Each structure stands twice: as structure tokens, then as C-alpha cells.
Amino acid sequence: MILSDGELRALIKNNKLRIEPLEESQIQPASIDITLGNTFSVIDDMHGGVINPYKNVTYKVIETEKYVLLPGEFVLATTREYIALPNNLTAFVEGRSSWGRLGLFIQNAGWVDPGFEGEITLELFNANKCAIELHNGLRLGQLVFARMEKDAENPYRGKYQGQKQATGSKAYLDFS
Image (cartoon, rainbow, N blue to C red; front, side, top):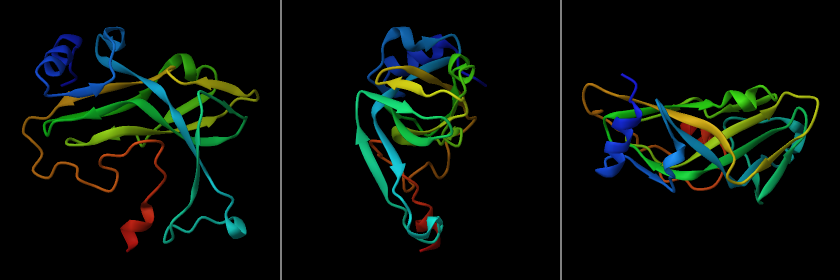
């Protein structure tokens, strides 16, 4: 079941769901808006131009209040919000249609597991022929929450737990 604005407010008030910072205007009828933070990560130029999933990929982290995303460019970004989900809630990350209509694809693999805590790293891709100017604090996406019938037996405690900033892939750890 997707949670309503009233249910979300009650969970936040009772500290069952943490989202910081959070303004009342971010709470929508069936979601909570998420805003863009001020860190972006781009993959460093790779020797040989090939990403090997068995090896650590290095990123250049950029802290800025404004980032210009060029046509065809891919960048990792972070939410300004730090979230902490209880063991019986999951969340879906969705881009806002206003940005999709401008050619900005917003993703994060789409799913936030019960028990996750941290800033959400977003994958941004500019499918437009024009550059898109992104500013810290822009409402780019939304979290849609669903309650599980029971607490997760194994809540998230993975490699991205507690992340801050735009966190690059740690896929190589799956092969270690």
C-alpha cells in the first residue's frame, strides 16, 4: 500500500521515518519531494576507456551550487535530504515530470530498501540537445513510500549504508 500525506506526516512526527531537512511543502498527497544537493560525481577518464566491473572506478567529486549538465552527459548527484527508513517501509524514487519533459532522466535504480539510511545518489542523464542548468535545492524527484506487511528479516545494511555526497558505484565489492 502506498502511504498518504497524513500517514507520512504521522511517521515523521513519531520519528519512525527521518527525512532531514524537510519542509512541509515537500509533502505531497502520495509522496515526498526530494531536492538536489550540492555534490556531483563524474567518472574519471578511464585508462583505455573501458569500465571493468571487477575493479574500482574512480570519480571526480564536484561541490557546487550550480551544475550545467551537457547534452548526452551522465552525472551522479545527491539529494539534499538524508533519509532513514524503518524496517517495514520501502521507497521508490521517481523523477518529477516537469524535468522529464525537459529531457532530464532521473534514476537511482528506482528503489530504496527498508532499513536504508543516507543521502540518495541519483543518476542524471541529459537526453536533450540543450544543456540543463541544475541548482542546489531544485525539486527534482519524489519518494513514494510503501508499507510492508512485516518488518524485513534482513533490512538493508549494504555497501551504501550511511552514504553522503554523490556516491560512485561499488559494484567491484560484489566480486571481492
